[in-house]
Image 1 (cartoon, rainbow, N blue to C red):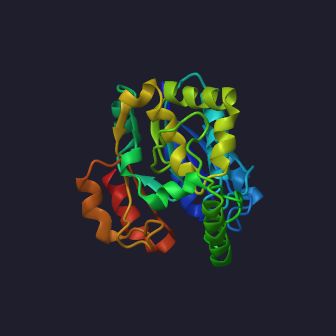
Image 2 (image 1 turned 90 degrees about the vertical axis):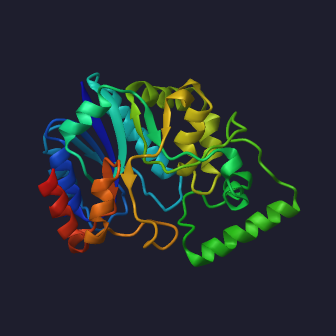
Image 3 (image 1 turned 135 degrees about the vertical axis):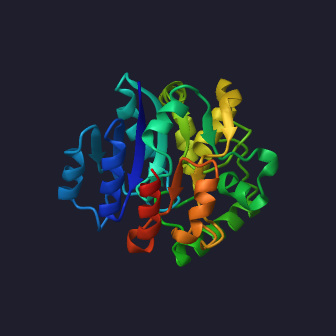
Length: 287
């Protein structure tokens, strides 16, 4: 039995290759590279494919907040589950790095089967978050962080309010849960996700019309299923939002070291180039 690491990436090939090289030594690695990446070229994707136990593909153009990030993870999930030896799966990014060894991961995850994920209940969601699924996103594959597009999307929301448009469900689900897409889950949960999406296409169709649909995807599925009792809230990823821009975590440095090693974390993000080199070297030495 082994673990699979599902990685979405778009930049910093040296860090991605370092991550894939480490994780693929004894486990399976599946990587999706954003098609619009300017830093990871076709020959570098082939270099990833030459690593043992590693498969890299580039299929989707992933704009921030678009459904394509969900599609990319579903593609990787389907590939991973073709390997019958895979029993546990982790969704991470190319800017992550493990903070415990893969041997420690095996001891922890191959012997237990919870789903680890961020999860906020409908009662915990603010009105600003509820807007993301109650009103149609008319630009589902565009980067809504673009200032002009952001204003235009806000205008369409105001117009929908005037027209009394107010979606109550995503697919068949009225109880909508939210969290980050970076989830760790047992094989059975991954199989459930794939089967549900194949048998209920309306879920993805409705999700596509949300703003930042990835943040509702796994959480709404699992919390409205028999897997809800398997969910442990907390995704085991260290991120520093305090130094970030409010919408994404900051790049990590040595100031984060103590909090990483003293907490219950399996991965940390985001690492980037020389900014994070000293911290990464310290963590590798600890591993």
